[in-house]
Length: 390
Image 1 (spheres, rainbow, N blue to C red):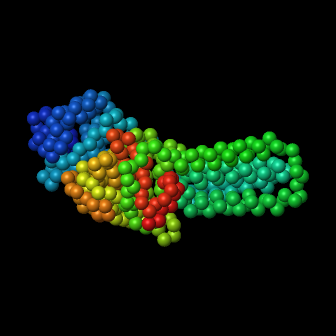
Image 2 (spheres, rainbow, N blue to C red):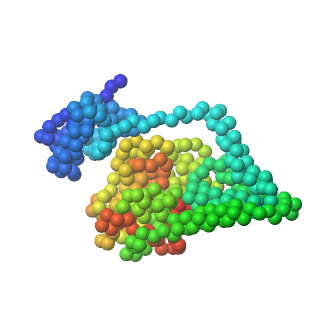
Image 3 (cartoon, rainbow, N blue to C red):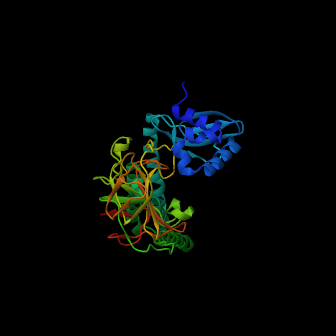
């Protein structure tokens, strides 16, 4: 199989000396600087040793050498020069590929799991031997649903699973018809335990939803999207996977919901997602300090190594930095140095960077720390599971 052009260009670049970098990668050398580029190349060669091959696989470009492997991403100019380059600063370990069941097996598995989940949620209430035990079981079940509904972004789950959970609730509540025929019972400890678990669940979810980093924006932003949107990441640590990254701790990930309240139509193509291609507007006045539009979309459900923000626009307001990421290739309308005004079209939602489906990532930071986002016309806190209509 012939060596892909990107792989060949990167292999030649890593094998060349500093005097050849400006010829092989003029734009990269200019933007990064020869000194910084030298540090990146030396660190890469320290990890991999002498470069043997550069291959293009499902996880991205893989640079292999005598000591190990690293992942990389590159783009070429029309004349074959390296036009953009990013190399991961850690050794690459191939991930385990999980066995995907054939379609008939999946069709049989999902209904089976749905039935088992319904039985698991409803059976305790139907087998309770007295009223106190029934109340204890119901409060414990309520705690389970508080955690699932409060932390699990229900609208992201398969429709069958959501309907199964709803069926389980109805089935459990229907068991109340047995109460007149049951004795009062003496399971006070069981009931107290159920109440304690329920109170703890409510407390945890409420605290995560109301969480603030106590680092407010200097002024509220304009919400950058129009229509109905669903927060899939946002809130405290329990609800937001960005919380572990200091500058992204207050970030939001937003997906669109279609007319039926789902984020996709039939199919797994990018166009099946309600968010894909939707316009993104400037949330504030500012100067563009970084913009990219040439990163290619990821396939839904897969992540090749790319710059983590993918196509993006970063705005400097003079007080904080606002970052909008994962935009569609070719859609970004501004460039570094441009001055933009609130409401100006910046681009469209895509699936570029560190993402498995089309969505908009937005966060604000000041001095390297993420800020609490606030938007005019969007009251109350923003957390996973929140529905926003504009």
